Length: 88
Image (cartoon, rainbow, N blue to C red; front, side):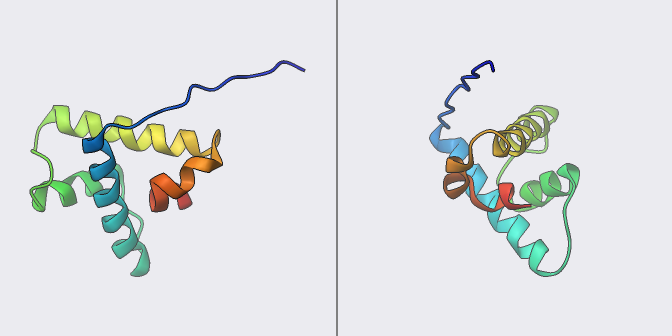
């Protein structure tokens, strides 16, 4: 059986702050029974002036959320760090 080595990912401080904000938004909506799409999440962050309303910001958020969701399948030890985004 082949052995697979996954790259350990370290997040920058601003990414960790954004992850926490995403967690807060997701948690608030999940408690009401809603799940947000990436676009809805993006506009929530824009409306709270957390990120600018640009294509670049949308792309970065999408890459971050996609990476976090995919990483859930590879490394459960990051769940405590990343929190709620990975719990669904």
